[in-house]
Amino acid sequence: MDTAVVPVPLGDRSYAVEIGPGVRARLPEVVAEIGVRKVAVVTSRPVEEVPDPGVPYTVVTVPDGEEHKTVATVERICLAFAEFGLTRLDGVVSVGGGTITDMVGLAAALFHRGLPVVHLPTTLLAQVDASVGGKTAVNLSCGKNLVGVYWQPQSVLCDTDYLRTLPDREWTNGYGEIARCHFIGAGDLRGLPLEEQIAASVRLKASIVTADERDDGLRHLLNYGHTLGHALEHASDFRVRHGEAVAIGTVFAGRLARALGRIDDARADEHREVVAHYGLPLELPSDVDTERLIALMRLDKKAMSGLTFVLDGPSGAELVTGVREDVVATVLDAMPRSGR
Ligand code: GLY
Image (cartoon, rainbow, N blue to C red; front, side, top):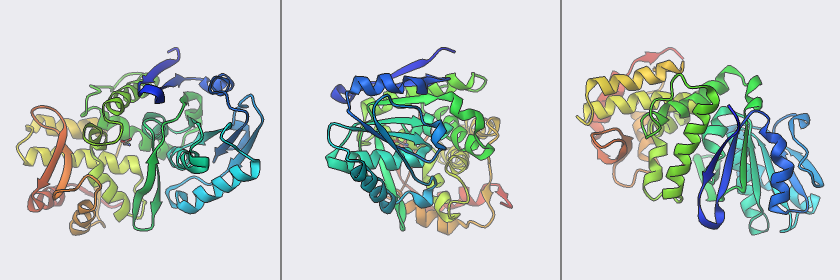
């Protein structure tokens, strides 16, 4: 496949997501188009994987991982910007996975009240989801992604060559997000070449973000499988990775929609089949109890009126509020359990 270019039309904040092997080589042109004088490249990757942006630059190395996605790390990044003398005429580049694009996006939004940022996502998860759409955030000790802003990048370069060395669990992480696209409008992506699956996921996300940049309604669809997913990540102290948790949450969403009479058995089974196709986990870990999961799901950002889920139904996926707790508990109790 040649490079796919997916536009994200957002008025004066519009940009393109370029997907394909070697697209990191476009960085100097992209930086020249933005017109910045110098850039800080923030990465968790080896320095040799950072492309030359074509203007004077510094490389700031920070650790990857949810445990490092904190206000303290954002402060460290901003201090490095200050030390390098970044001004409002300059820019920022991120090279890394989703935790890096989230943190660097936030640092770019805050430093001097906003510098242009270009994302070079290096994991499948970051390419299909985290780097696109302008959500930036860090975690607090009491919850995930609680401090953040919307800050759209100027460009996203998804170089699929970065995926060549991806560890197995990082593939799982990304495929969890691709699998949930099946139920929110992307259609059946199974069997397509990887780059086409990435492009289709990004195209779907771009269309949703364009319609609802600030997550007032439609953008909730992107959280398919995430209500249980986020609770499970938290309840397992992040032992269950995001994409794995979303995969289990997607199976659960199918079962819950079935229990509520919104879909039939065949459609509920399709949830399990799609998740299984990508080699993703289908079972809840045996040591995570139903009450704890429900307590965490009550804290979900979407939950403004009782337990709230994005669920499939006769008119497709939609936000469903006030789901009865006893139904949720029964469906959770009936989920298969693994020894993990
Ligand atoms: N990752 C969900 C969103 O960007 O809205």
